[in-house]
Picture 1: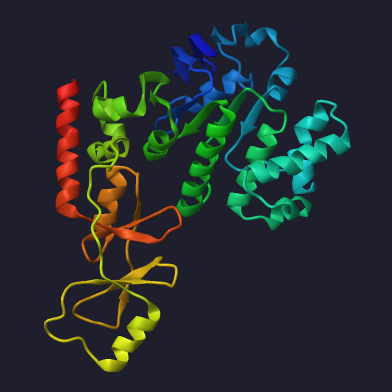
Picture 2: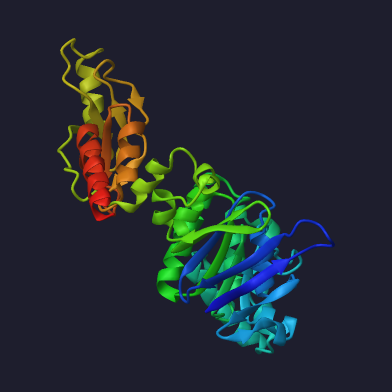
Length: 367
């Protein structure tokens, strides 16, 4: 779909921003450019739509040299999402989303109708369309930016650190929203980030750039975590790459056990019956609401205090999520929930660790 052929970009006579880059970006997949600051990843992205012109080499999209396409036409044929969303402050959300459509001479009414459809696609309600960017949260602004980039239904979507300016919770939500959209739309997405965790969550393939604009490794995220090609990649991925690699192994083999639960009314009855738990109180109790959703843990040492429960493990998720649920729980038991958020049981640390060891042996056996 997108091919870099011996691309080099130099500014004046200084060290190259990108040096002899050759790579092929797959159609209908998410390819993530990741690396430290100043490694050329954003420059490489911007050369695709000619926001930056290469010093030498060629870039082709669907076999056509982008240098032969007028820059304005090329940019309108691709979606572009930047870090700060880049919304026009004096236009409503609907008009912001419709911007590219209007530039492409789509009638106003048709463009606004399409914009309203796209707000729903990115998870925003129709009433948001009448607001201005200053009336939105950072996460909502980024969703509008994605909707605007999708407005003309472009085959290519370029995303330059689009989620780095929002808080970690919103960032995780936006990442999952992008994956959901990609399952439905199958765009060719090139995504720039400096965060290796974000790269491994989103990328079908990951390109690790080294200082000086060198492409150090280009492979599936799992391969980069399992077998970094050199010391630079290993150091960039980090010493905990084994933990990150757990995101590629499912936790289907980890048993889910029953757990003692108590609703708010049951906890109130217990408190009325005793001011403190008996000295031989047996184990932890999981507090739940009336829909059996977890609220926290009741310690055997204090039958009234409610302790935060840690992260949750959704059935069918990965070993990384299972281990995180166990380690973050004050009870040492990871709470498992279904799609509705209701408790289905708990996972235990020894069994999660045993599944991790088994997955490691299977990987080594497949090498």
